[in-house]
Length: 176
Length: 125
Image (cartoon, rainbow over all chains, first blue to last red; front, side, top):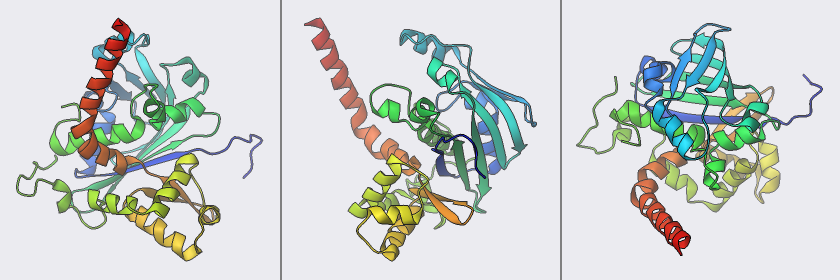
């Protein structure tokens, strides 16, 4: 399996255990009212069938905060297409970040969410972000490294999942 | 949906089974310099095989495997099969959880408040 491109695989994997039923986690990932309550917020709209549209619409607070930080924010901050939707187990979509021209130029990447019930009311949630060396800026952003180096961008997937866990287990996100 | 927070244990994680990592396992895994070095190697570049990791550490293959198992059971390393090889990835989520639970709560707000103050003072002078 060789391709003509020499891009090196730089995929990232994030795993978290959440004390919640698979259906609750699925809902928190795919329902816009839920997605607006944790992580970067914003209303995620999925047309849950192969080829269906996926987009995240920024909320007003987020847009105002981005504006105040001198970062004009489009209405749709992330877009993509559903590749596979098998509720409440597996969701695969393409993913493109639209807030920054460099990220836009790096194009679509692939994000997979997998929910595995552990049989004790808890689940293992695994997020795999398929990336390669052509996605340098996106990689920095979603790993939270950009933020850690003082350049903003938030805590990336680890932060989003940590916040999702807090919200599902305690009813409140990290921000309270 | 999720069960209410249990005030008797003050820690809903203790009700998880052994498969689920907790803070204790994370701290224990991070307490060893070789394991921290292995995490640093994966931070630089993920998706490495055991053989690749082994060449960077002055230790037997069995020793490296033992450390990787501890990191895996603490949830800090996740593996994925790619054909006949097993690739190792850094999973930063448990560190994030420790950060949110133990560090953010006690320090970050004070530190950021001081940084803000310093910035304001420097600007006004």
